Length: 132
Image (cartoon, rainbow, N blue to C red; front, side, top):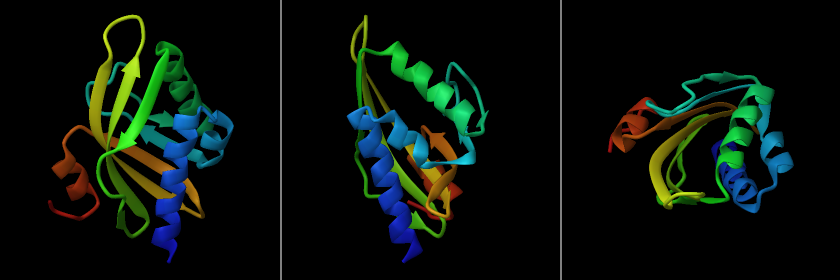
């Protein structure tokens, strides 16, 4: 049953981001969390510790006037990990942008301890021991 609880935590993460509730978003990360952005990201990371993770997310939030993250796959459970493919749609001063990535999150005690982004969905599934 733990993995279903992990899926619920990840779903809450998406809901908090889309609602702009950065306090709730922050609370879903472990104090020692590590986030690794996708390859080619302007800030290469990794971001180590909840405060560094939140600074990185805060910079991203400030860069756009509007954004939403829309899951486009099921939330895939794999032990203590959850993988989900999503589209991140952002708007700012220039044209709207859509970025499709798969996020693999590792959870412990109801909090995110590791988050990694993959541009290649098959590579993300392989990272959690699954094949497409």
